[in-house]
Length: 100
Image 1 (cartoon, one colour):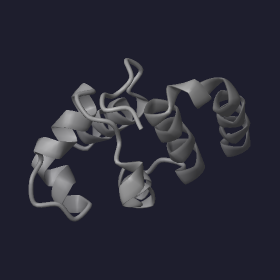
Image 2 (cartoon, helix red, strand yellow):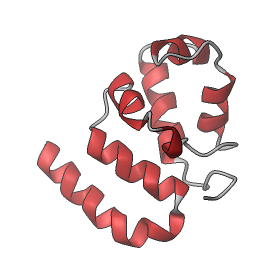
Image 3 (spheres, helix red, strand yellow):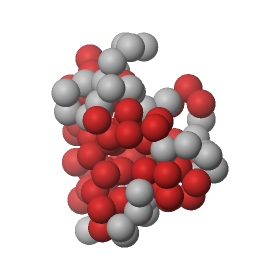
Image 4 (cartoon, rainbow, N blue to C red):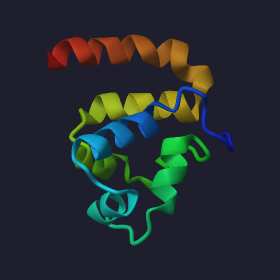
């Protein structure tokens, strides 16, 4: 697993967009998903840290930001494993079409 987030940082952008839309601070959002500190959210949003897929909380994050869970997971996989993007991106397009 890479130690730094990719430049695309889709998950960080999704979280930030949700927080802005709902006027939540990083700490507010962190508490919403069960953390007591917002620094980690800031690191994900800024791209200084990759999304923690290994912790198994991706579904909680997806639900918290009201994202399609499958789309969220596929974007997270692309961010964490950029070499998989050519294989995963077509699946993302299929998920987007089905959710419309």
